[in-house]
Length: 248
Image 1 (cartoon, rainbow, N blue to C red):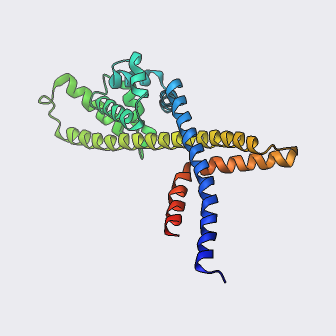
Image 2: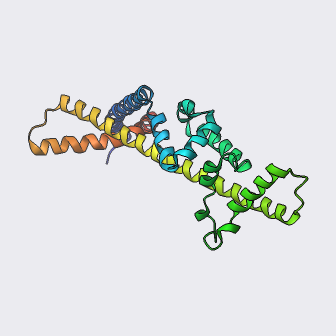
Image 3: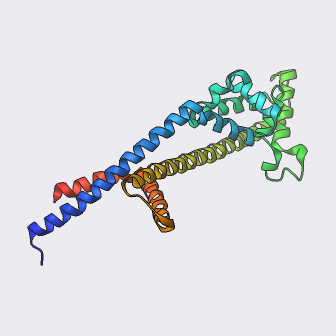
């Protein structure tokens, strides 16, 4: 049975080797993330990604044009919108959607996109009574005759209720797009981090031990992929192992 000193020595030896590997993985993870940030900055990857996602989301070129006019002042300033973090970009798009909701007659294409009838329950049964049509007709009437001249109280109440429902619909559409975009961006960043970490690990392993034959290269690839996946969490491992060594 091991005594206290022997147990401490064993723990120290195990943690020392684990700490060495964890430090290497932490360095690889840091290098990979730094390289990714450089690539994103040089090639404006976030801007291109956001632009592509918005283009897939809003298929109509007319609707995209109106959105950019409301959000940035014109398509020539689109980079200003797409180069922002997703939260700030969505704040500008939210403001643009609110303006389109207030003035559907001035921005009909983006208004139609955000209030598509196929997202409303029962809209297919009677399209003329859909929230989009009710609020659009009311807003146009108010723009022409003025609020005071609009004497139909029941129509006004129905239009305001339709506007509330449309506001909720727009909010959900914006949230859905933001969640999907954030998820895809995080996954792409994670995949790039693993790929770059695996490449750096493969280079380091190949320099330390020359791999020969099919089995050797399979082991190299497996270890490199494992190192690439573990690299982002290596800092936590270093902290935990350092704590074990201190207690030991």
